Length: 446
Image (cartoon, rainbow, N blue to C red; front, side, top):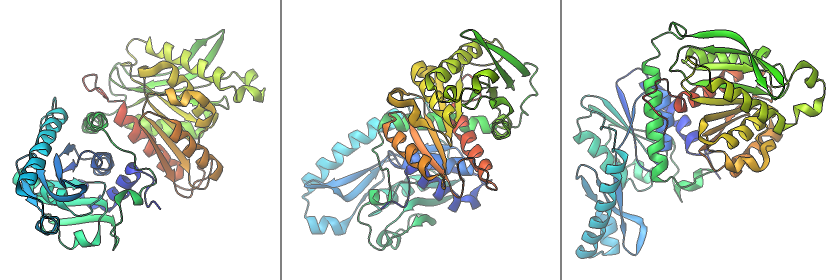
C-alpha cells in the first residue's frame, strides 16, 4: 500500500515527469484542497507560479462520494449522464446539490483569492494538478475553466489516474501521471499519508509558494552584492559561555538559517558548509554555529543533552534577532544528528519566531514531548539506507502537529556520503527554506 509517502512526495515524482516544461511559460493550477500540496511541488520543480482552480464535485445525494458531475468557478458545469441514469437522481435533488455546492465554491473562491489576484492564463501553458483522478468529473471541469480563461495549452497532471478515466479525458491536450492502475479502488490507497487538507493549509501553501516564486524571480541579484551584506566570524554570549560562529547574510531582507549540530564543530563541518553554500546561492543568510565549546565536547553526555543544546540555540537566536542590518527577523533552523532534536526543542519554545525547521539525518525523536508544540513548518530529510533513523523520523513526523514533510534520499546512509546524496539533501533544504523564509519583507510566509 502506498506508491507515495505523502502528497509532497507525489508532487515531486509528478514534477520529474513534467521536467520538460521547465523554462516554458507555465502556470501550475492546483485543485483545492488535496491537489494543492501536490501542485506546490510541481510548481517548485518547474520554477513556475502557482494558482488554484476552484471546482466542486456534485455528489449523488444518497452516496456523496459518487460524483454525478462538477461545477467550476467560472460557471462551467458538467454532468455524468451515466451516473445520473444509473442512480435516477431527480431534477429537484440535482438542483439542490448544485445550489449547495455553488455556495461552498463561492466561499472558497473568496477565501483563496482574498488578497491574491488570479494569474492571467492567456496564451500560457496551464498545468492542472490534483492528488488523484478517479472518475475525472472535476478534472474535466477544471481543464475547461483553464481553457475558457485563455490558456494556450492545458495539461492535466496527477500522481495516480484510473485507466478508465484516462481513456475518456478529452478536455486536456495532454495527461501526465505516475501511475494508472486498471482498477482504482481509492486514491488514498496509493499514499502512506493521505491526511485531510483544510482551507487554512491551502491559503498558507499559496502564500508560501508566492513567496518562493518571488524569491527566485529576484535571484538575479547576486547574494552579497548589497552594501549591507555581512560575512564575518562572530562570538555569541550564552549562559556564561561564548559560542563561536560564522555569520553570512546577503542583505537586510534575507531570512537567516541557524545551523545546529550536536558534535560541537558545526561551523567547520564540510557537510554543513556545503549546505550553507547552497542556501547562500538562493539568497538566504546562514549562521554556522558551535553549540558546545571544545572542552564541553569532550564530555559525550553534552552531545545528547538536548535541553542544553536547545538553550544555546535559543541564545544564538536572540542575539541574531537583535543584530541591526543583518536580518529581517525571519529565522529558520537546520539541524543534523542530535542538533535536529535541539532545533525542534528550541523551535517549540519560540513559537512563531522560528519560520521553518529542516532536519538532515537527524534525531527529532530526542525533542520528546516538545515535538507536539512545534509550530514551524518542518522538513525531515533521511537517507533511504539509514533504516533505524528513518523509522525514528517516521514516528516523529506522526507526533508533529505543524506542517511537516518527510523526504527520503534514495541510496543515502546516515552521513550522506554517497555520490550526489548530500547535494540532493541540500537542494531539498534550500527549497524548504526559500518557501518559508521569503526574501522580501513585504512577503510573509502565512
